[in-house]
Image (cartoon, rainbow, N blue to C red):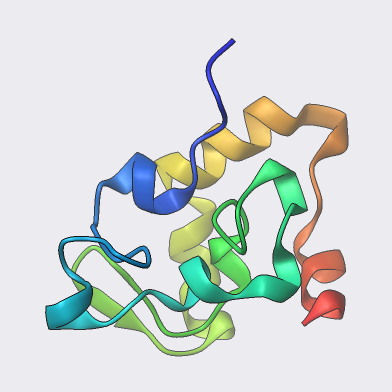
Length: 99
């Protein structure tokens, strides 16, 4: 079985610490949010990015969770995590409680 991918691996954005785009765009908040480390099997918030504000998706800065959540629910990565985790999926409210 392949290792579970974090969002930066799935999307190949290069915004993880040490990634190719960190010098230009800074590290993604999901890649450095340690309070969600391990949630949905990810590194930091790498498999919980939909509850982290300040991410960039589709070339757009996603400032607030309330503004981005609709797009996130339609995201191929979100769908992938939901499918992979099944019964173990940590839901958004539980993730927000950790933040």
